[in-house]
Length: 180
Image (cartoon, rainbow, N blue to C red):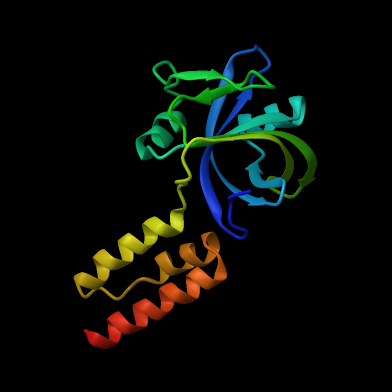
């Protein structure tokens, strides 16, 4: 498994609706060993589909605009092909995809915490989106402008990247601020 423990990966989840049409939605996914972990809000169509069918595909894509297109439900011009086992949509040119089956769903006030088991994985390119990496770019831009108000970005990095990376980033920021 090439995924890092404690890293939140930004992905697009494929599921099938009750009417057999498909649904795509952006989600953050944690991966540990052979399991995936997702927080799905109760109003989510994806949650309803996963609770009903228990299967889903996680698409790892690099195109940030695709996340907005999916959120706007503009599926018509998104090229897909069927996944190997579930025949759910896989986004063409994705870096990787995982076919998963829900093992556990814990209900909370506004959301479910979903644990899924990875049944198959296809890796085409090992570059995966992590929100924390992009926050590093935002921090760099702010710091070059002498804007030291970076608490929001740091909180996202802490939440989405592994702890050692977070410490390394804080160390770099301290050096930059000290030299300004």
